Length: 144
Image 1: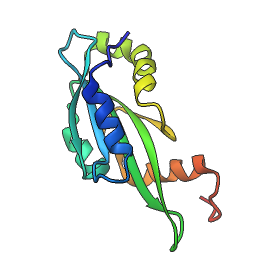
Image 2: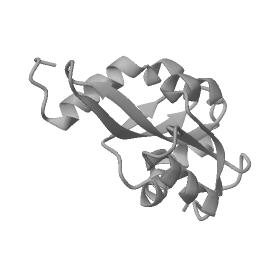
Image 3: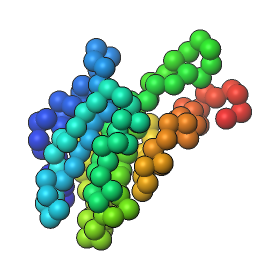
């Protein structure tokens, strides 16, 4: 089991979800390589691009992101995604625990439209994620 009890995680989650702040992502990392305790590592306002720069290729991390996109000229949508990051240089034992720990993380980062498994930073490019969000939303009339 992953320990996600740090109150800073819940505060950051509420901050990302709030319409009153510019914060649109948070990043959780393990305290140490051998620890199962997750801590808030960073938050930001620069979306997926800024988040990609913060990801460590030797770590497994979890991120929660607000993605804003438009379906047409007149509408803006905001959806939330959960990112499960396993860097290409992540240790085998850490990788083995991710599926169990992801369930614990989902108890805290509860509301999201899609889960995005990411193994490379390019997996977090905005356009393919927006396509997935449109499909998940069900109201795409432009054939996407």
